[in-house]
Image (tube, rainbow, N blue to C red; front, side, top):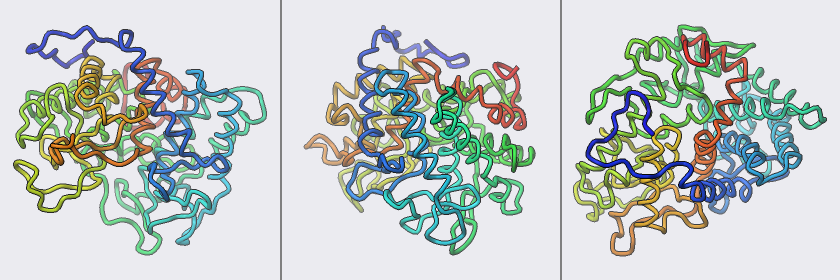
Length: 443
């Protein structure tokens, strides 16, 4: 099963794997990822921990993924609809009622929210920023549950009302700070961050949601201005819109069905963002087969370079070519950074795009390194080169972003559920059209 515009790898006979043949493995790993949401949620307010480590604060992006994961759990029979609706409603009530203001101890401002919140009080922690991308992931969760919970009961009606109000409250134009395009965030002590979104990345989701707003829509030319920073490259045999870390491609696709619809940039290139992600997978596989840094474990069937936890070993001599190691950071190919750390969840997260590559890679990884998936949940980072004699370096615990993204991407491959729900949202359709998208299901 190959995407249009992506040539099949002629050096390898097609493996007999498919979503049907690997259904048990897919179900086990999807449910294992969902169990993170169950285990690390504060049921009183719906906040979800950033990581499984003791004392971890809430990540608002993880809450967005968790909201969507709860309705997937209903469809899969892991949760009752009533229980899911009750917890979703408590989550929305918390965000609606929590403090909005310019103070340093608020939960949000201008309809956006701080990146990290205290799990109990919901107040800003760690001197963190008001984050546009993390707020967009949360707001996407609001819209998704609004479209799913369409029943006549009191809880479901309240979900729709609150989700709509939360989306309408976001002041997207304020986040431009008077510039043509969007900033990345705001800090209560120093104002807007001194950098914006440059090049193609996960900001695609922010622009679509902002352009579709019924109350504070971004101007159409803000999106065009952003696309002027895109880099179209020929790399490792593929013509691709470049963005190095894999997650930057996956985050918008988790929510929005970008198959067969094109903006002006993609019409000119005779491609689309779905095909582009398929080609990005091909670049990752080719890079890991060539393995220019001679990292252990890399191959055409073991890849997945993205954002995740990593070893911090300043000046370590354990890495063959590059003696630097990084902690949590966004790694990318082919231009780096690359310190030999893989994200074990990343291959399976590409299931909607290149299912054969995703399943072969996941099976190969689990066969060679079963330690990367304790309790049926992939760890954030794995570096086979560091501590090679003892099986490689492993990230401690789990990260909620990895687990939530995996639940959603697997479901998009299995049933297209999230894509179908978000296609129903008039704001998403309006945002895509105002960004210049045409064709496919938008027609």
